[in-house]
Image (cartoon, rainbow, N blue to C red; front, side):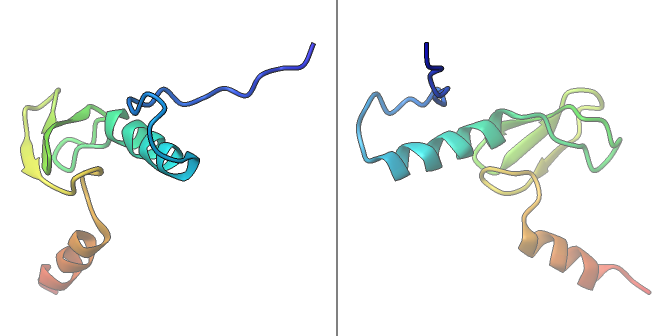
Amino acid sequence: MARKKKRLNVGLRGRGGSTLRKRYGRIVTTVRASHHCPSCASQSVKRVSVGLWNCGKCGYKFAGGAYVPSTKLGQTSQRIRTPI
């Protein structure tokens, strides 16, 4: 018997094309994953709402990207702002 390909659990319920469903699935999995905290470096950061992130261990709240806590633009600005 052939094995079935495992589908990502997406909430589109069959709407949209395959590309849209795959993109939505990748976004949902990255949002729901736990991320590293910039304050205590533990892997317990979860998204509160769009752009707001909270560490479950130390309670540190910070602003970040919509889908990931730190964006490429934010990392670049951190490098520019840090004094030498």
